[in-house]
Amino acid sequence: MSITTLFFDLDGTVSNNALGIQRCLNFGLAKLGFRTLTAEQIGPFIGPPFRESLPKHFAGIDVEAVLHFYRERYTEHGWSENALYDGMTDAIRTLYAQGFTIALCTSKPRVFAEKIIEHFELTRYFDGIHGPELDGRFDKKTELLAHLVGHYKIDPKQCVMIGDRDKDIEAAQHANTHSIGVLWGFGDRTELETAGARRIVDNPAQLVDAVHQFS
Image 1: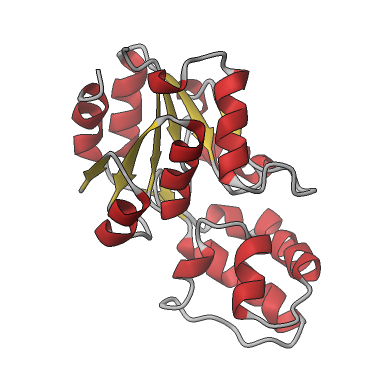
Image 2 (image 1 turned 45 degrees about the vertical axis):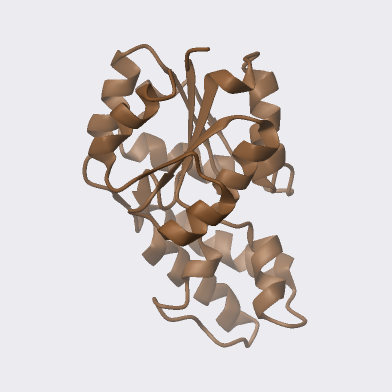
């Protein structure tokens, strides 16, 4: 069965927003009197929802309060503290020109994801931008991707989930889609292999060929 639809993660896959995430999360943590995070410590918080990751690392934290302050700074500054990975525009443009349906499937709130994709002038290539709502709906990527397979009315085996973390691969397995792990983001080969990635690529230039290997 040929591949028709590609779901891309955002942070760590399409763009690098580590600086914005670190600064905004530290803004929220400092407001509540918690220790802040260095650039080396921010990795575990990029990818998984904060409602899942914060309680694991900060005992007794009020996650909703942190999210309030995080979003306050992110809305004004954090979303733009962001850079496209070299080669991603070319890969997405090529796949679009080849006729694939392309959609974003991210753990970042949808309203911010839409703003970022528009900022990078990629909106024209995406059939949809999908992420959690601010109230927490679709916080779990497993739920979001399974929902999108139904939303697009496609067979799961016609889809590929492309992302840099184990959560992306686990979502693909849950939804019974194919998966490609990428190594330019915040996960490593061991994480992606352990999660069950069907294919792993080193750079965006390899994405097009990797997608066609499923056909």
